[in-house]
Length: 122
Image (cartoon, rainbow, N blue to C red):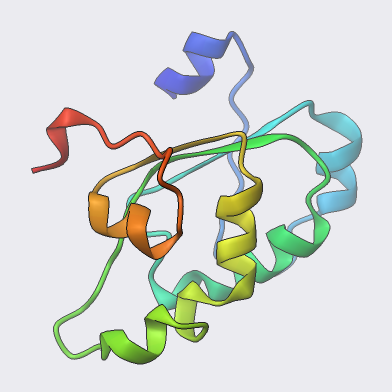
């Protein structure tokens, strides 16, 4: 909400678990998108990233997102093109106008050396 207030934009939230986000309406009625949520790199959000990468036509920023690796989740397969770090997620991060993430590890995984990593990450 603070980001919206800072930008002077109205707040309108979409649930990233919704499999039927109306991107035609979003592209038609909005001027930009802010993607935020700490755990959005968990594999359960893979359908969101796939849909967003294919259907979003607006400028966007990614804010406050970070890696989320449950103890039993193997890291190797999820880093190199599988799980949530597949092409759609990497494309979204590559095409974002601004990326603010929670940790350097995530910056490395999404190949954004210019990502902002805030001081409060620990």
